[in-house]
Image (cartoon, rainbow, N blue to C red; front, side, top):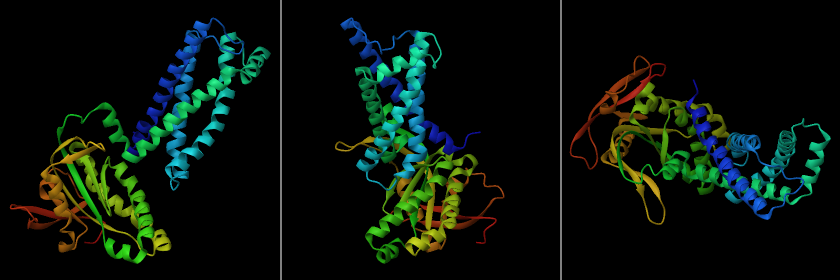
Length: 367
């Protein structure tokens, strides 16, 4: 069974393969039209038949998937702290070298298929040497550079607005507003104002960036979706069924806590503080849709948003780190792993009706 993180990585890598495949077919078609219309063909050019076409499709798709894997699993981490323009520049240089290697491997195989011989045949390597000094070589390099540029831009845009959001924009899923049932967690950093005053704005921003990065794995592994970063607050949502499955929403909170505790010494070393947070949970219906004229966003609207924020604001009053509405608790099967402590009926700011709330503890933890 694949983990949520693995599934997410696969979903993010597949578009790289599709981009390379589509652009590769476009370039191949244009090239063949030019060759057919001119009536001439270079000695280094490979004639495209069905067998060559299948190989080319598999090859460019495979290269695209490989680029996606390298990009998302390695280079993103390596250049995480670089600016957008520097990231694109450095990655482009790396991938240019990568392109030379790919051409070195792929062209002889395609030539061997065309000539119906093996890759060590002298004819294959003569054709390859002719190719390196031909216009086709420059054309192939240009094609690969365009494919690289488009796929890198896709990767950066996906990282900046979120893969799920990008896919929803492309598919037009929320072009027409839809009503959904969602679980929300509003998680707010404790003592953030005091920390910001102590560290100063620049160092505090670096702490926030590290803090949000360290919370990411717990969110991904619980099938959560980051809706917003609002200063020192992060808003995470789940589609209702995903959120209650295996208590994903609650597990997310405690796993986020665990991940921060594991890195407490590192925070103390670099920032002199160990960040912590408190969170409120609730669920209900929201209207989801695209909005904005100058800038498009997919947003949620509904009373559940305001209610969850108000629930989170009661954490200090009750001196607890997690508050969950009893309305949500009735849909969770917490079993013996968690202990529920009722906080009774509570009046939320700006609300007329009271709401029953509770806090949770792991049985391994002391309340």
